Length: 212
Ligand code: GAR
Picture (tube, protein in one colour):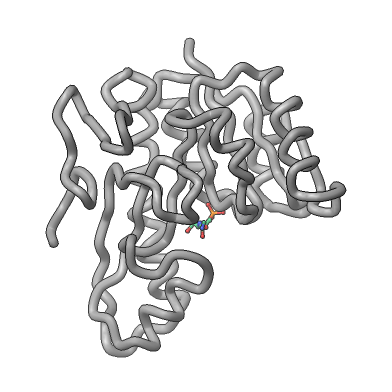
């Protein structure tokens, strides 16, 4: 059975969705370990509850490169077929990314290329956007700019508060992340020359669901 390692920093609601999908065999893989840079990430409790080994490497660990070298050393013990970033809030060094190129995916709460970085929901609300969403992409050395696999859109309603938008976006994330992970696990998804292919067909610029 193929192996996934999940990296988190926070609540772990996406992690929980992935755990559930593995249990229901909607993802045909095993989560070998959950890593976190944040010792108090709630997601660590969820991993423990599911009897998944957890590895905490606190943020304070020397410099960024030493951190990633240490992370790689620990991570390689689990021989992951796929590394899943699920609310992992550290920027990975090129050293790390190049070592696992084509094997790391991330979920980012915006309709990329709009709003890379932090506070995406606030930005969408302040700008008066009528829609927002989430993107799953392969990780490359450009922050939140790797080739997009799948996006999901949600509306922003006139009286929405930030939390309404976060909840709406996360609901979509919990559906589409397990789906994409299983595509990868089933060898349906590949990246060649920065282009994403699903079942041998090149995906559009903004991924499988492209409503632009
Ligand atoms: C998710 O909404 C994810 O898109 C976002 O963090 C949240 C984690 O939630 N990721 C990023 O912002 C990465 N740039 P969770 O801990 O409940 O899964």
